[in-house]
Each structure stands twice: as structure tokens, then as C-alpha cells.
Length: 302
Image 1: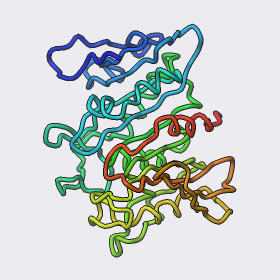
Image 2 (image 1 turned 45 degrees about the horizontal axis):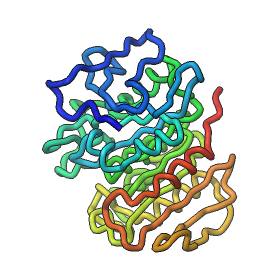
Image 3 (image 1 turned 120 degrees about the horizontal axis):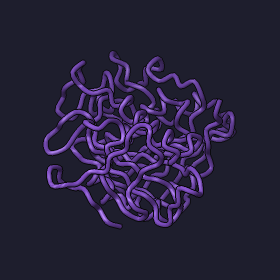
Image 4 (image 1 turned 60 degrees about the vertical axis):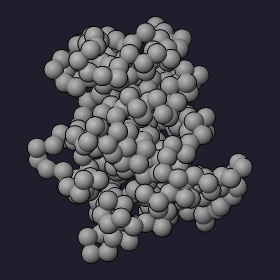
């Protein structure tokens, strides 16, 4: 895998006019693309090895970095490009819209960044931005609109959860990593989910990954409005939203990994969380398991 972008200003960017056919970096490579507009921010795209546009549209996975991070660092650290190469999906690792230190933070209304500041009207609408990326790739014939997914680390996991709340007609499944949420915490009781803040119109399959030793976003909750309620509360809320009728189960699924699963969900949805008993606040993901989960789900098109 070749990474063609890690510092702006020293690069030659690929440009994709809105009316163009599918235009991506060469197969097996990662490069910045101006997918949304010619004067918009460059967006890091990885094209899988062996990709042939003549064979038709392929799945799309968004990979969202944590607070203060960048798409380039997230792509490098997750090693998810190798999984994209093995299974033939396009991987997009955009930068968030709020500058934070040497990186960026995602704009989630009502949720403060790690700097303690709430997003304001001056900040980019990141839901709209990510959606515009997906639209450009679908309209260009690159991406199958029924197979669009999102994963992300920490603040990127929170953003992925938010996309599941507000864009359930677009995403076929979500997989937050050390960042599962199901809406904003109640203002008067941060240990509880405010159900009015996450009301997806469609069932949303969810697979969360977490570390039992995570002290940044503890499984038990904390950290005020940024995290608030526990991961179990988030799981249970998604199970309610997906109308999962079976009692939750907990099983060891791999050495040091146990899974909490909610079954018999509506329309084939599922809710599960895989917890690494030795893991912390990091990419505690089996990338093959992540992709197998995504591959089980597609979004019916109107």
C-alpha cells in the first residue's frame, strides 16, 4: 500500500468533477481526492488492489479518526487498507471539520470536543460533508449505495454512532470503536441516554469494539457530556431501536475477547459488542471480523 498524502502543500491532488465517471487513485494505492468540490478539502481515498471499474460498483467504508487525529494517521494505524485490498471495498478516511491541535475533531451537535467547546454555527456540518463524499462516489459509479458503512475510533466512533442515528437511510451498518453512543446524554443525568437525540428511521446494525481497560471512555461511563452514559446503556438503546427481542447473551468468542449480543432484531439487524479484556482506548479491532459484519448487511434502496 502506498500512501500519497500526509502533508498538504507538497502534493498533486486528484480532482473528481461532479459530472465525471468513477475517478479513484490507482488500484492498491491511497491518495487525496477533491471529491466534494474543486476548492474543498482533500479527502484520503484507498482503492483496493485489483479494482476494476468495469466490474461495477463496490462497497464503501468510511474510516473516521479520533479527536485531534487525521484521516492519514487513522488509515495507517488501523491497517484497514489491507482488509480493503483483500475484500475489494473502497476506504475513505476524511479529516473532521473542527481544527484541534495538530488534527481535527468531529462536529456533533450538543457534544463538546476534547477542548471542552461545543460546536458552533461557524463549524462545518460534518454529517453533510461525509454524506457529500458518499454521494460523489455513488454518482460517479464507484460505490454501491446499498453497501455504505462507517467505522471510527474514539471521537470517530462517536461520529459513526451519530451517522447511524441521523443517516439510517444511507448506512447499511456501523461499527464504532471505543466510542459507541446512541444519542446525547441527558443534560440533567449524564448516566442516561436522551432518547429524543437518536431516532433513526430504519433499523441500524451495530457492532461495537471496546477495551475493558479503557480509561478515556470507560465502559462504565463518565467524562461528562462528552461520553456520559455507559457502553451497556448505548448497547441497550440500540437494541431497543432495532427492536431486538431475545435476551442478551455474553460469550467468549476468541482468546481474551468476549461478545455481548442482542438477537432477534427487526429486519435482520443485529447489535453486538466485542470487548478486549486487555484492551485500552485504541484500535481494538479484528479487521476481518469487522468486514464480515459489514458484508452481512446491505441497505434496501427505494
